[in-house]
Length: 258
Image (cartoon, rainbow, N blue to C red):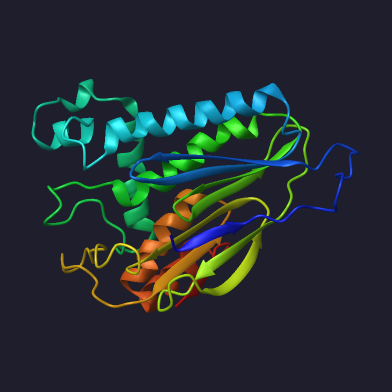
């Protein structure tokens, strides 16, 4: 895990509205990684557990559609020509359009179609897209602040009639496992980290088709986890060209390169 949520309560005992500032955490293993939902505020409301259940259900659905580790996923069936695109779930078209936009925004540093990946591999975008989409269920719960963390990539926000609170996020030093290189507060929006410390060299440079061998990591944060995730990948591929493209296309995002 390249980034972790370090839970920190607001003022002890109560939030500004006078409600309890209790917090709860829910954890599940899905999409091949640990996903945790952290909630503050009206944590005893029955809508909280219902929304968390809906989050898990959506992420399981995404896994059944896009996993490259499950031979029965729709993505793998599409790759093998066993499923016609017109019969596939509409989310495939949504993701494909986002991948095309990501390629344009990053000046080609993010690409879902490069050699060696079966011709099409949107998984570099899918996790951030899925987590942000699933978080909408939590945003519909009144009186809570939340942080949904998927293996270090996270989205924070607030439910209806609630003010968001800050979540302290630690960014792991890729050269020293378990050590925190920096920390920052996320109130709303998304944060994503790309690197090789956890999974080895697995990120491809779409310009050459080869994997990026260098060590280190890149963390990006801003309004949307989808685009934070895309930009983290792009900047890891090429920090110099990536920063230039980011400054032009999405200046509201910030980056931390290690």
